[in-house]
Length: 107
Length: 122
Image (tube, rainbow over all chains, first blue to last red; front, side, top):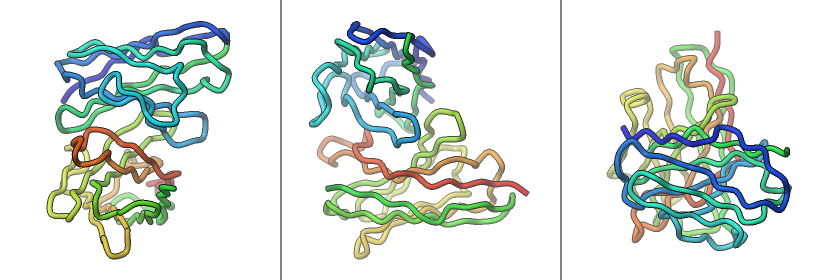
């Protein structure tokens, strides 16, 4: 199974700053890497597909990059509504697997 | 508007069975692969099952293979998860999720339901 390791586990942020979240795969997943946001007590929401492709309705401050084993989700100008847990997920092989998540909290 | 509404959760004893349902609306259900994803309390996400558009192909991780069965009724736009031989570690919120368009493969989940809680305990 492909293991996805997200770092950091928790990130303390200040509104307005640019941040980057990391997702590292135990083997190459090409660009079959997707990002989700889960706000408290809500269902996950797809943010980025295929490592860098934007999703309709998602604010443009969210962007993704990477390929192979190293991926990054960036938020350019964090807003309070972005305080959530972010998960990466690989779609390259079965079983589909998720990373352990990165929680954004207010500094 | 795409809507996925789960039902059927609750408290069940270890070793017993439970069947979850998901009612879909707002899209052509028969055109999409569908899935179940679960989340144990305060934990991360775990993919549980996927079914093809016709229902002829199903996929499971080892953790539930042989115990869980995913199925669908395209005429009713409904998805199901039959869970047998339940264990305490199956306690979680279960989400019904739609895979992205089949033209893009079945790699990601583009819509999620609100989830239904399943508690396995004596």
